[in-house]
Length: 333
Image (cartoon, rainbow, N blue to C red; front, top):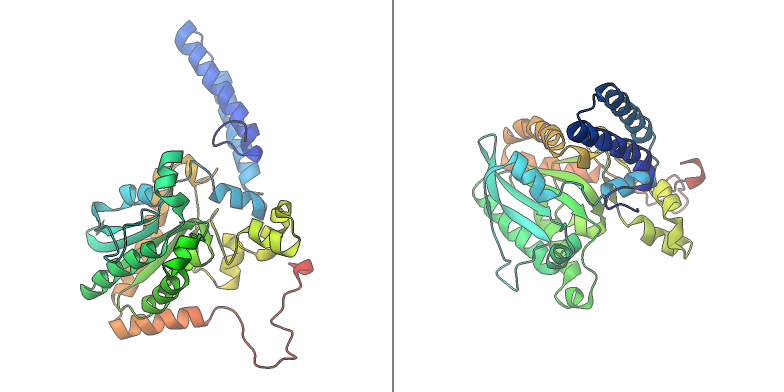
């Protein structure tokens, strides 16, 4: 990327938009009537956007999911949730700012919000650890979700992390235990839980707040047991093979829907969520409300059973050591 926030495959669109901006400036400064030319270029930009974003490969979708101008959890909260009050700390060690948690109202309904939060600047990213939680982040999330369970408040989680922080200090404070405990406890909460994959859904870092009755995913987000680069480093000892690993991992929204890992793909505006925050938030809000209403009618026991069954249906298991149907020939994927 030469310009900040412009992906390589977005460059043709960016160049046309730059010409439009130049012509508009000339109209303003020199009083020329260039409206027809501007309209032609704007139509051309729309055509390019439609052509490019209708044919993205898995690796390009991963890049869009990581777009530096993509809306993060707090952006969705500001556009969807009213009267939001953030809650801090795990009451054990510290307040992990990689996890945003609190309470607010969604169309008048009180909801609990828990999500990964990245930063826009280098300073913010350091403060939020690039959206990769420490154990205290997962413990804060669980503390807030237990409060929601106590007061019968539905939970919305927003997944956007490359993964849990893998540093020594995180391991010393029980990273694996914190994630495992969250997964176990989220299965036993008697309130509706709706998971929203809004960007990167990376490994245990995502699953640590990712157990719910319904899993929604934005159309350019991804959800995976490992990052494409990590997979490439293991399989080929070469991170440059990430485009190929993104294909065989089947991590795109469309693939995940076919595999039954997610329940609904929420369509982003043409050009990606970063081009229109409000339209993205509106589409996601409508999807959440559509699923939340029937869940609210279920009793606590039914919600727990529904959630457990939802996750048990994923994947395939066999006790037969000669059963090869569990394996996927990636050459045909």
